Image (tube, rainbow, N blue to C red):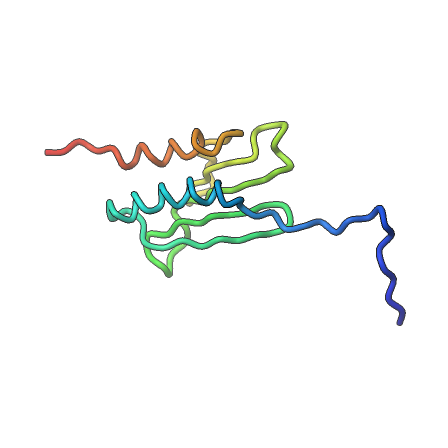
Length: 112
């Protein structure tokens, strides 16, 4: 068995991850939703083609929402998406703040 190193022009696909500024925007929304009692836990996954920030109401449940970053869709539909528990895409776009506005609407409620 011999080990062959990849050719110089061949690059291994790197994992997709959220940048620090992107995480700042997401965690800011997460903090407000935790303070409102809507969310309780989160998980982050960095895979080959997608980075996922999952939001949970309770730790042992399926995620309520997934915030996904898919750089391959940057030129087409936008690299960010908010996906509901049932798989429905709530919002997709190139600007993370605009995409997350669909979740911020859930914070605004009428006060009795």
